[in-house]
Length: 338
Image 1: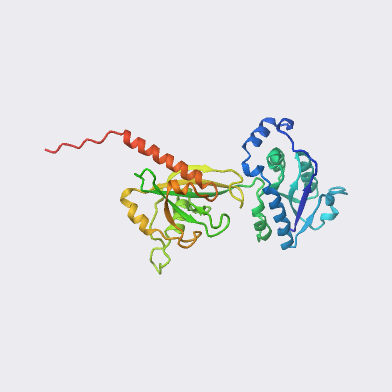
Image 2: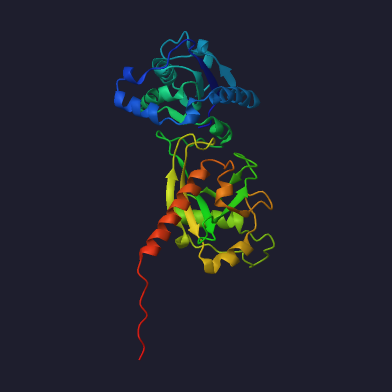
């Protein structure tokens, strides 16, 4: 089905956000408010709401106000006649949001809420959870353009997050301040910002470790001069050499949508150090010539893309643990030879 999109701007002026104590599911409400990230408490929602209005204009999609919902009779919304899918954002509260979603749903509209373009998002999480159970879609402002331009709209009743793998490559592992492989992103988001290599999993084609190895080779070991049967990569990284360190799944960590990142570390053995450092060559998402090794202490002083600083810190902690375990093991006795 080809959808005709409309944008609905909510403006529940003067509405107070629902407190955790007034929610029927108070335990969930308290948890939702406490765990909402710092980004969700900021004023960034207004910029995203304004960006959505401009996006609507660029795609000749009509922007409606709440007045368009008045006069609904028998589930009909005359003002939205011809519109089949509505993207909702703006200012609202718990009860108001539920009422709007019910009105649109009863009129047969596909309802999609641009979650990060809602004011007071942390207090709306319980309401969003409830309307999601009724089939309302949750999307990010950054993914709206993809929704508008997709040749076919694939919608799950319960949307699924994307998965990525990010790799912290550590060399000079015996040093007090080891080296970390860093690159500068050539594309948005975080264009021009220092970053660790990584990217999205190829669905149905690889597992997370294979994704990590592939992305690392594509971004940091790319052979620009390869011809014919020559190896595309200057160095081959085995998935089995990578160590899973952490996962980061905050809904706000990536403006493109809800992306769950899986952090890996590659603690390069001293025997491979020189070969690995000599093979570094930027490719794919990395800015040309930007791939290099930086001392961990210096890298952590800089602003890294996404939440990559957490992966660097966790990888260094894992390395410290490995060192302690290695030191605690008794040395192997040499066998006596006759």
